Length: 418
Picture 1 (cartoon, rainbow, N blue to C red):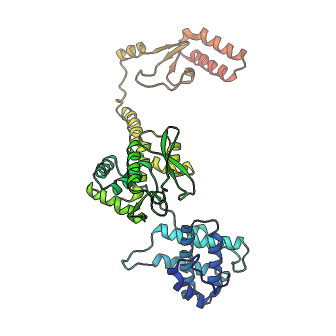
Picture 2: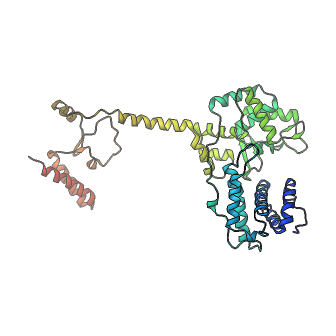
Picture 3: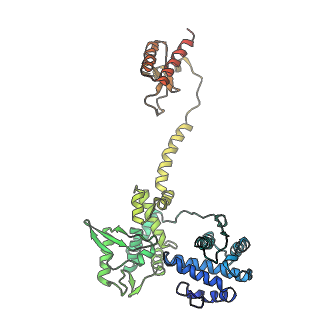
């Protein structure tokens, strides 16, 4: 591809001026980036291509401004990378805010991937070795997903009952299906299908490029049928539209927040309803595999994040364990044993086949068939014949460990004073 050709078929038009400035100083940089974007556009989503363009544009402008001697990516080394990293960290918006950790990771990650690929592809404009490494990227921030607790979720759904039809449908769809906002906006007019005696919503190819069917509850089914009857489809064949116009994520967000304000809640992001559904499901015993299928996750690793915020499940498990710990802490200090206590302890000993168990009755026993090796096990001289038979039986059946156990017990009885 010639650098004289416009690059706006792979590069957003708002970037043309910036790329024009890069081209005037180092045309090979623009040519290589344009070629790279055309390559990844074959197999990557448009959003991924857009992020790559934005990151590479930022890096190319940095090279032009701070390292004008660099005319090709083959000339890029650690010096250029390190100054770029500092520039990103020092950048401040008009409001005085810097880039978030995720933005820094995305930008540096896209540039790193660019160099890794053009080196792997043996491009002439590639440097001899990758100038960026994994350690150049800041550590990922992994916050817990934000979700509505049960009380706030109930308030939101009650407010949705009183909202206008579009707002009610949007909130109910997101809250009862866990759809991503992009999937919601892309629902086709024929998305509602009947199969196996129930109604399902066919979710279009989304973030992970996977199709799936989501079960539709009766309340949502009624809302969808009413909406289709009253509004039909728009010219794009989409299920949701406002006055015939396509619905985008901003429209959906405004719709949700109209309902959230009526419920007395603060700002609610559409994705919070997805997180809320997953949390509600896992707190009520829904299996992770089923939640993964519902949400369209490709691996359980993606779904496991909700196990971290399953507050009710964690609380129940914790309280059960804490009760046992509290019982341990509440155990009274042992007192000097009196003759009366010794008689009582003897009465509470449990008879075994060849001895006694002295474990206090209120303590659980985790063992079923290894009493002789337990610290609470006790035997006396009258069990010697039984212990000898057990030892001899173990020897006859080639059980040396068991034989040694009974021999030790016999030896301990022989060592006791008469």
